[in-house]
Length: 121
Image (cartoon, rainbow, N blue to C red; front, side, top):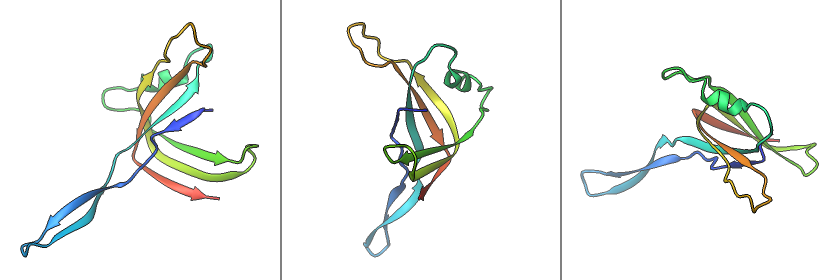
């Protein structure tokens, strides 16, 4: 279970269009890239995230569907679920190392995906 999700957003490009009469219009363009980062505490043993990142062969990698859910404080009731389609890892970052700190060591996995839907419960 990941402790943090950041950068999860998808939008549309804005296009400026000028017609032959001097009029200027703004329109929606293509859907923007869907890139986001997941953070998780490091535990002993092999990282499945590292294995997933290194499973790439040539330009092919195992794409996976991911669901990220916001729940109530008790974790018993879903509020919103973001369903991400065809996600694949692009980076895995090691934690900052600081012997004078008691912070939990977190690794971050950056992903890219094809599309996202949002389900309100």
